[in-house]
Image (cartoon, rainbow, N blue to C red):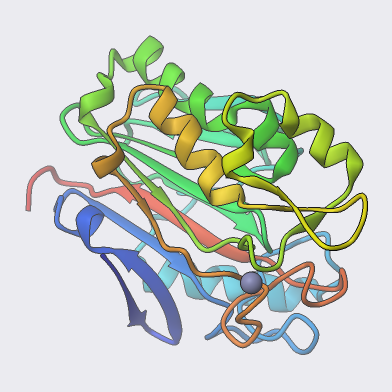
Length: 269
Ligand SMILES: [Zn+2]
């Protein structure tokens, strides 16, 4: 179950199942509650979209304050539509600058893993037994490369996570109602078994409609996570431009919203 909530000025979406765990903070932030001006109004966290740097820093500070993220504890990625995953170990150093990757995993409390999107799929992973978290960014390229399945595999390799202990949450992204693609995307997906479920022809010749959230759901299930442990918000970013930044809906000039997940400090609550 998903619900909207508010901290400070920020309106965000949360998963009832993750909140019930009691050992982490998480949020799929909307665009509401920041200081940026149109077309990036208001909580833009995209640094390469043309927004003023001062506004971006103020927005990030609001996020850190609202979610009580320790100094230096918000880790963002230089997202490159790949499938590389960066591990932040409990006793290792925090990355300097932005690691070039599309997935982050940590078992370290007080480190917030951030994903920036405007139509792409933000994904959270939680090993509820070992208390390890992950965050990934999956656009069509990352989805075709299998980044969601790689996150499950990386949790197993590094932390011996068992699929039955993993909960996955799929945040707001462009939906099958709005995500029309052309031949290169079709070709990248059509080889995937079961692609007929998330890739459908549309009226326009040479165009298809893609359900990116479903493609990721199927991939995560294939990696061993049970269906009942995969939660999807089913909110379309392009259908709700008043709530979310959408690259498609804005014709390419859009801000980025932040999704974040962080293990709580101080053990059990
Ligand atoms: Zn839509």
